[in-house]
Length: 491
Image (cartoon, rainbow, N blue to C red; front, side):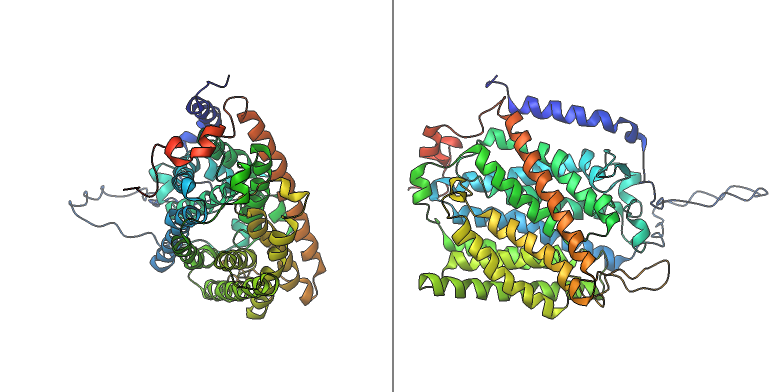
């Protein structure tokens, strides 16, 4: 069984999923979207058909299309894509030991490409399409001309938001870059030992059966959204999910070589800092794009993102200095990431003071998780290479719960102008709504259980076909044996 090709397994998985998509192959626009070329029926007494338009005649843009909003969503999506390619690609490559620079970067590139194919063929509609189950949308492709050019909509959430003013192609790509970065973040937990063959199989399966469930439940109008749980830009859907799944994957796959665990110096901190900088600025698209409009709340989300990140970075550096006697560059990067993650579920729901509080918490709570909890005798048995549990899982959980405390009802995601554009906000415990905190805790519990159990099952099934961990010879040699290439030429 160990000789079965992972690519055959991928084909079988794709085939099984596509069987469920067959009824949707004939579907052009999504159910609640406005068709791009809709025309009124001709009058009964029309004298004659109008002559065909001469070659070169331009067709007017549909009335629903707002070029400013569309441009911002595409730009925001590109910023988020840059967080993965090249952001996390070179961040990982710089933070790991020299012998794993190529493998770590290539894991990012493969994940980005494989998720896009899965996303377009079935996973987008499982995450944002018509309801199939309370926690999952109906699988189907997002590739026809009618679908791509029609007005964007999220069918199960459309009643609670204004009509969107960009096409489904923009929505599909915007949501793809969020999906891709989730599995890439998860991969940071298993760098330096996970078999690349196992990674090839894992990415599309995890995206199909785990990410899409959490995404639809909160963002796609599923059961958690119906209860009132909120996640502005992915503290739960992305970061808590990646932190929990990554930690479970690190446990199931097994640790690095003991020598690597004891001595794993970054091979190039300047490259790592470059990746970190791309990650920070790319987060403006991460949080600024989620109102779906180039509006005031998008601006507030961008400002709050940078406030919280700066505070968290400074707080983490202060903690390193107090406990270890000197500031650390790697620590500053971790503080930056914790701040970005902590504000993500809250960016458009809290005001600037809330962002400062979240930044302070992100510089303290994830620090203790990484430097104390993950180094304790029990938890350190799991080899989480880059501490994803702390910088993403704990920070995302913390930020999501703080939404339930700090959400300011005056921070409107949309400005209310009647039934066509309802004002949407969240009200936290500090403003008199304790129920929001309880809803945030319930949503967190669901994401934790889903990702822990689901990731464990997926990896155990994959292990029947390929080894999850590289052999000792590959672990000793690294890139030169695994890929036949090295990051730095010896000559």
